[in-house]
Image 1 (cartoon, rainbow, N blue to C red):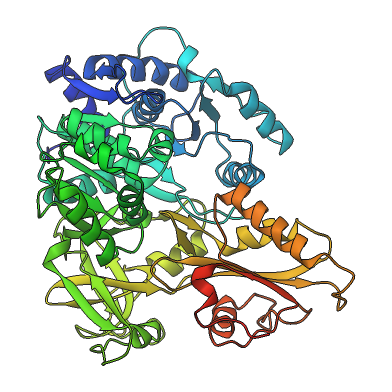
Image 2 (spheres, rainbow, N blue to C red):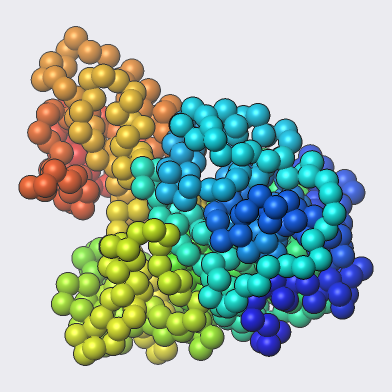
Length: 578
């Protein structure tokens, strides 16, 4: 598996050597007991070649191609067709009608100038109208599942440094960053994943993660294909409706490696009933990866205890750290191998110390050791760029063959993020924006420097939240959105009113409208909304909102709102004073 120069070479050989082996097993959305659909390597290759022929005829080689698919099988076909045609795949979520998502798609289109948009026949009219609304009506919208014609026999020449796809898994709607992932990056990270999962050609790997996100794409679709194994795909909607369907699929279809963010494991603990638990068999689940958001020791313990009764092996839970800029994986290992209890208050200040009697403690979970195939990790002072010794907190810097060359058409941000140099001259490092430490050879992630809010496995940029809130009322001026610490990150919004008058306004109604807006646009249950006087929100001299300062004011009780909503789990903690 290490001799291939590109993922295209690997896939075409898979189809030649084991054409009848099942590449994809697609479980039905509506009923976990329904009949799954299977796609062989021969069929997957043939469909991808047919679509690749059309892309080549349309001059898509070397050009971005949008992928907006509700169908998991068609997404796989379209993604491989882009690789076959030498095009640059740009996976994004299928259009769902929400304004936040529409703005995001429009931002990606502006940045990439795609040659064509691939979607399903059922979604094509909506996607065409979306493109037209934002001045991109000239971009062809092709129903990929309706393409007919011959398969391409001769594939364009691509090499290890050819761009395979752009990953827009996180970023602002206004200026999203597209991570440039080459074939070299993709293959290197597949080798790192192999070291973590230890799966083989006879394995079944999969889960419910969306395929436009890096964990779903690289870990649950492409890694099984890289192995010549079977990808078992549960729809995200099926998991959200009934989390037990994910666990039922693991037992029923022999999935030995699967993963999800921490919130998904917690959701299973809370929503899977005793009756459903009695029908599960998780004895074959060798590796259960928790990644994509902070890994909580409490979740791991609760999950292993509850589902150990269904046969979950004691050492199955693994914690992992990674990011799209490194293709996916940076480090991983058994979660039980490294837990570290530290003083919670000191941790919030970026210090590590032993818990003191009568003070709150926080347990850090090790994200394992860094696989040599993934690269190198340094802990660096984010201001001085000095490498910090083991046991001290700093920014996590990474380099290695899986680290992408940069962002699409954004030289300045690429130079800032991907070309970092330490004081001692170590260069070519990726600044992750995450805080952590290394102790006894293990990586512990402790927090983040960047403003991004991580909720339920998704990255939300505060400027997106702020923009949506400001549309709620013409009375809204500057606002600030940020997360506050706790068992889980919780979203708080501080919103200025364009008036000093409070008594003639329905402040409670405005707060309700803000909560409803964020629930609809981002599927977020906001934990705090504070309506404040003009001038309350701190800004820099250049006009940028100082979200770190606003978070500190909130936690220290330094805000005096005109009206506020606080969820129960915030009401008893540090917060605003009347």
